[in-house]
Image (cartoon, rainbow, N blue to C red; front, top):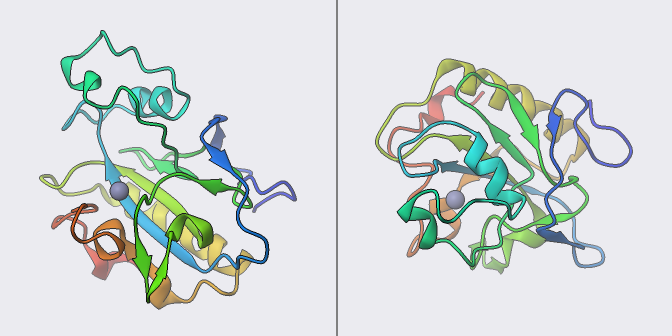
Length: 176
Ligand SMILES: [Zn+2]
C-alpha cells in the first residue's frame, strides 16, 4: 500500500535530497529497473543509502572518489534479502535514469519510477529480490494505471549507449 504522500507503507524510509518536481501533467507510466553495488560487487546496502543521502565517505574507498560529485537517487532499492527501501516519494522526480529515452520520449526521470536491485552485471539476483520486485511492481501498477507491463524496462533499454544494468543476469522471465 502507498500512502497519500507517495510512500510505500512497508518500505524502510530514508529521505534523499536528490529529487525535484516532475513536470506539470507528466503521467507516471514507466518503471526502470537498475542494479547497483557500492563499491562494485559489494552487496551491502549501507553505502547505497549513504550515496542517496549525499553522505558517502569518499575517503573510505578509492572507488568512491570516482563518484564524488554524483547527485543521484532512486525511488526504491531492494537489498539481497528482498527488503525494500524508499528514498523519494513516487510523486516526485528521483534522479536515476540520466540521459535517456523511452519510445522517443526523452528524460525518463520525468515520467518514471526507479527501482535499484542490489547486485551487479556479474552475479545472479536472489529469489527474494524477484519476490519483492514482483510485489512492488504489482502495487505500483495498481497505483498508476498508465504503467503497462510493456512499460517495465531496464536502464540499459532507455540509455543503451551508457548503461548495461540490470545486466545479463537479470532474469526477465521471473517478472510476472
Ligand atoms: Zn541504472
